[in-house]
Image (cartoon, rainbow, N blue to C red):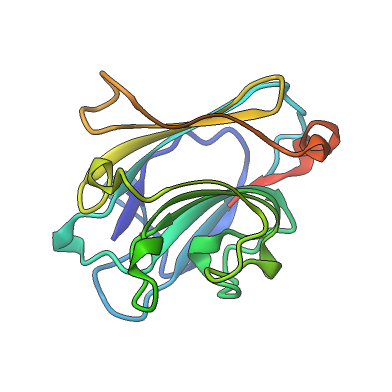
Length: 193
């Protein structure tokens, strides 16, 4: 199961698939086979020069975490779309991917940052991949970790993880430059999916 606790700043359009709120947490999937869940928080209408999102990621072994999940900040995202794969992101914009299982290419398990149209992504061809980290999986895989994605006014993304409730953070990616169109896009209309 994947769970995230979040503070809503925009109207929730809905929960999709197997997603539910349980015990104050957003649970995308339960510990069962063939599950898929998603949610959407609509864009706020404000194009902030900087942004930050923090959420809890639970991929413990008891929950039998499956293929993975993603957080997308994009337009045109569909929280109920299975294509290409939920862990590759959705829409056209920024996606932070947690790939927890890859039978054909086990070395692809890790954290990825993508930008562009998610419909054209695959695990064998990653032209939109901005950054990847497959060497620090012990920081997050099969445990509970806080995830922090920050984007500064220069359009640089940083990702950090904490396994002690946010007391200390470990950098996964730092100041990854997003494409120029990120800065000019109407991000106030982008959704969180």
